[in-house]
Length: 153
Length: 105
Image (cartoon, rainbow over all chains, first blue to last red; front, side, top):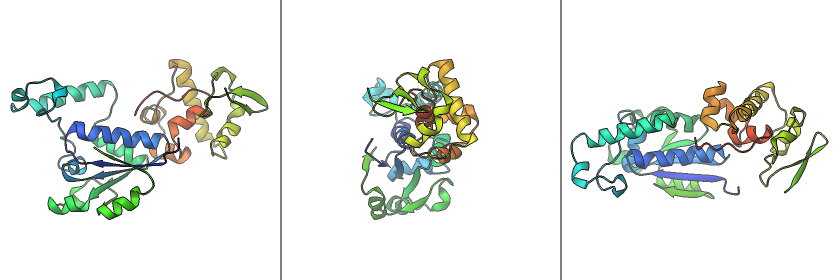
């Protein structure tokens, strides 16, 4: 394995937008690669103390759910689909998002918030979980990502 | 298939260094296998993890990946990475003479 570093940008605040990034970051660490997660835009919900325990599946505009768009928009549908999915994941021993973030952090993976998005949503360090390493600019991000792969989710 | 020699015994390994035949492994080989992946000085704590993976394999036909390794062995994730910086589940399996675990998390 020649790739030694991966930087993953999480831009969405949905369950299906966040999990793949966590799995890939953890997987990179398991391979001995350096891994950093960069949370931007709605992806900030994944590390926001108020929201990170309540991340839901987006049930509108996802053909893969095989659910009529009108049904997906019904109140409570997102919570229902999320509950079902979380149950399956629990059976497969896939950790919930808070525990997964802790795993990535304990594994030595970096968690970073995007400065521009933090400003845009009027947030500060206090809004984020303790595992977050720092709030960084896009320039910092490119410096950190230099020489490795960048993945956008 | 490539060969390696540990504890004066030739063994078959794959391209990544994992044992092709886990029955060729003995505990005496551990320090030399560990050195081949950059881990010098095997502690009793390393051995705990290595023996744990070996036992998992003998029981279930597969080692465990990092989350299960920590949960089941009781060794915290941070410590696992301190012991095996280049991948705890992968390297403890390689040193234990078993295939790379199939888990994703």
